[in-house]
Length: 326
Image (cartoon, one colour):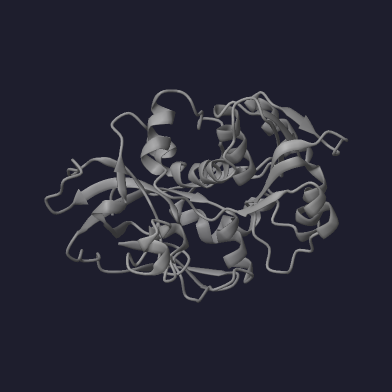
């Protein structure tokens, strides 16, 4: 089978490997789509924490089941599935508290262990989510959408609340979609003209500069320490601030402001049990995933094109297409 391996920062190689053999409780999945996200770019650049090389990237995945054991999930060979890439231990304090996204031994496909930039992948059956209606593209978008869904759930957004999303990259856009679906009155703050234009397609107000209006709920999806520090001032009295983006540094908090407004500060990491709900929402037309994919490339093109993707015009989400046969 074909594999694209990131041997070290900035250097992909293509290699052939024997098909993997599933262990007990695992299915063999033919990978068909791999979404590219910021984590992949950071790994390519050598800036992703907790990352080791060589590594096969890819955690935004969809595919077709090739073989699997008997199961109670209604999964069969040839089913189209979204792959939930979070492998938790099931035994630590976080897992026992049903916060398996915070598992102390969490292993994420394409980050801590090899991911989907290969023809075949073994996946635990309970991490596969099928749909008879969604396309392979839509199924591969469930994972990035789940990040926004979890962030909105963390913010406990109520109908009619004022919402500000800072940063209109894929994660900010995902938070925007679910905030709108929850009934929020959403504004998006973004300095990049192409991303502002893209965000406007979701029917929300898009700003270049912050104004004086405060929001009940603020989502910072920039992964920028300065933005995260300044976002506190955008939160209304008694409001909530959710850090969706991650930065590898300290973030300073204006404590007098924090206390005076009695702001609730929350982190949001990965997702928890969101895949089935998101699949239903896409199937029912509540969430539109059709707009997301702006660039496409084949698995074989990854070594040559990957480094240029962030600089290609208007790139929001690049999707790698994996051929159906070896």
